[in-house]
Amino acid sequence: MTDRFIEISLVKRDIHCTARLLADRAPLTCAAVWDALPLGGDVYHAKYARNEIYALFPPFADTEPPLENPTVTPIPGDLCYFAFAGAELGTRAYGYDREVRPGTTLVDLALFYERNNLLLNGDVGWVPGTVWGEVVEGLPRMAEACNDLWRTGAAGETLSFRRST
Image (cartoon, rainbow, N blue to C red):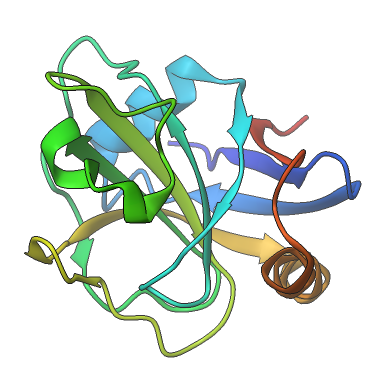
């Protein structure tokens, strides 16, 4: 199978990086994401996992992919996929007042940009994610933008995923 690549962008900051899909390790997740592209939404910076940015989406796969290529310790450049029931993200501390409602499911597409991440949530415990891609170009510049997002705020910024040409 030919490698597939996507572009991840912080739209307002005009920062991009390129990632290779890990179809050999997470085939169902990669297929679900690839078929749903392009995707974009409000960006969030992780509160607990550390060096992570992400966007939340309604479920987009016909069938939710199972956990593939799991991790609780993502490394710089990992793209992770999570599916959360509204109850798992229901506390106001996360700031998802608009997205989370009882009975909803949300898909979280995340980019980890630096070391020392741990997917441990104080409300639900360990949160393994599927590693479905790895950044192969542009991570240092994206990491700078992510740190800026952490320091200056995410309001008004969009995280975008699209097929790379």
